Image (cartoon, rainbow, N blue to C red; front, side, top):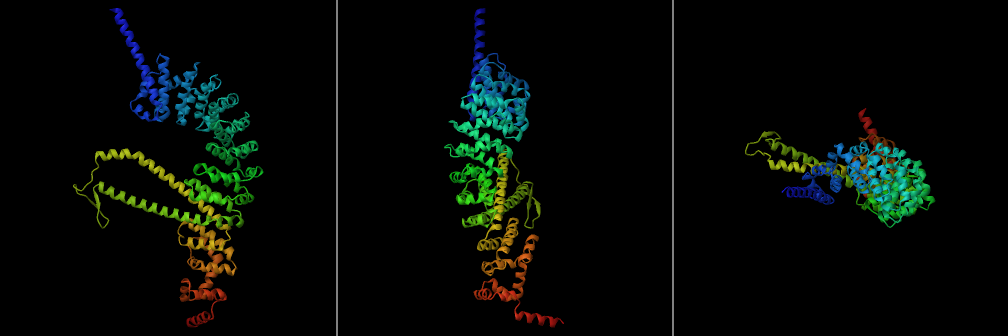
Length: 618
C-alpha cells in the first residue's frame, strides 16, 4: 500500500511539473504573436510567470522568462511593473552572467525588452549592473550571444546622452568595432552598427568617440557590403557622426562622400534614402557644400528628387537646399541642371506637407541672390503656385476658425440643456422643466469614457496637423518674399500687389505688400512704360486705397515712394474724373498715357478753382 501511495505521489509531482512546463511553453508561443498580448495581460498571466522564474527545473524557468520577455516587449505598463521589482531584474542579470549560451541569450533579450520603453526603465537595467553583464557578452564565442547583447546595449544608449556616455566609459564602443571587424556574420554587424548609431546621435563628444577606433574605414567598407541592411546601417552611422559639427563632417567627407554618392544609385530604396540623409548632414555646412562640385555636379541630387516622393524625397530636397544656400554659383548650377521643375513638382503634388515645405524653402534659397536666379522660377509658374497655396491655406484657416466657433456655441447650448437651462429668443437662460431635462444615462457615461482616449488622440493629431500647416505657410511666405524681392517681371509684381491688397488685414499679406511695394518702387520709378502697366493693371486704383494704411511700415513705404504720385492724381482730377478713372474708361486712359503731363501738374481749371476758393474765403 505504501509503495502504491508513493508511486501516485510521484505521478502527481510529474503531472504538476509537466503542467508548469506546458503552461510556460504555451504562453511563450502565444506571446510571440502581437494579437495575443492584450488577452494574456487581461488574464494576469505575468503574475503566474513571475512565480516560475525561480523554478528548479531549468527548462521551465527559461520558458517562463522568454514568455515574460515577449509580453514585456509589447507592453510598457507591464515592463514598468516588473522594473519596480529589483529581485526580478536581478534574476535576469544573473541569467546573462551564466556560462550557458542559451541562458545568456534569454537574459539579454529580457533586459532588452525592459530597457526599450523609456529612460527610467533603461536606468533600472543600468542600476542592476546589466551593462557590465551585456558588455562581457560581446566577448562570447557564440555569435548569436554577441548579436542580442549588441541589440540590448543599443536600447540602453538610445534615450539620452548620459546613458550613452556610460556605455562609452565602459569601453563598449571599442568592443562593438572589434565585433564588426572580426566577424563575418551580417546580422551581428547590423546590430553593432545600430548600437554605434544610438551612441553617436546624441552629441559631438560621443560621435567623436565613435570615430576614435578607426570606425570610418570600417564604415566605408560596409557601405559596399552585399547585405542590404548593413549598407543601410553604415550610411546611417555616417549621418549621425557628421550631423553635429563642421569638423566632424569634414572628417568623414573626404573619403565617405564619394562612396555615399554611389550609394544614392543603390537598387535598394532604404540604402538610397540613408545615403542621401548622410549627404545632407555633410553638405549642410556651407564650406562643405562645394565639395559636390569637385565630385561632379548636383545632377544626382536632382535625379534623386525626380525619382522619389514623400519621406524618401525629403532628404534630397533638404540637401539641394543646403547646396543652393552655399553660394550663387550653386544656385545657377541647379537651374542649369534643370532642377527647378522637380522642385516645383515636389511642392505642388507631393503627398507629405513637410516635404512640400522643404521644397518651398529650397526654392527660396535659389531665389535669394538676384533677378537672374529668380527669372526661371517665375517663368516656371512657381510664383502663381505659391500665391494660390497661400490663398488656399488662408481659406482653410478661416473655415477651421468658423467651425471651431460653431462647435463651441453648440457645446455651450448642450451644456445649458444638460444642466437644466434653456435659451430663449432674447438670449436669456431659463430653467427647463423636469420633463424636458436631459439626464445623462450610465450607458452614455460609459461611451464617453471609451471615447476619451480616442478623442484625445484626435486632438493631438489635429494640433500636429495645424503646426505642420503653419510651418508650411511660413516656408511659402518666406520664399515668396525672396522671389518678390528679386523679381523683374513688372506684370507679375503688379498682379501680386493688386491681389494681396484685397486681403490687407492678414499679417502674411501685409508682409508681402511691404516687399512688393518696395520692389515696385525700384522697378517703375521714373519709367513711363512701367507706370502705364501699373495703372492698366489696377495698381493705381488699389494704391489710392492705401493712402492711410494702418500698418506703419506700409505707411512709410507709401509715403516714401508713392505718396507724391497719389497726391498728383488727386490734385489733377476732380471727384467725377477720379471715379471715371476707377471705372477704367478707355478714353481717359488714352488721354492720360498719351499726355502724362496732365497728371504731373494741376490743370488750369483747377488752378482757377483754387484761386476762386481763396477769394471766397477772404
